Image (cartoon, rainbow, N blue to C red; front, side, top):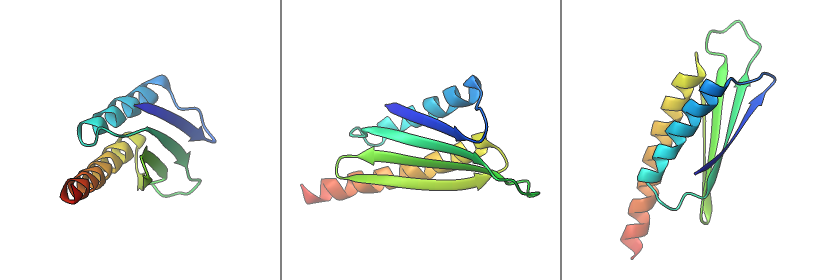
Length: 100
């Protein structure tokens, strides 16, 4: 799957981008018609420890799923967002099966 990763106001290192790519590729197991995805990494300027925002948009034919998570690290945000996307993709697949 093609993953467009954009980091806003900072430079993401190669390890983080590879981690995100690897995790996003696992979404193909749950729904095989995923076209591509856009990932936005943002850091909020607050004194809060949970200032990292992970936002992902996954495009499928006729629809797109958006998940936005705020966590202490981008890795944690990625894991939480991916599990949420997995649930959404499974739900969509079940709905499509029910209509056939």
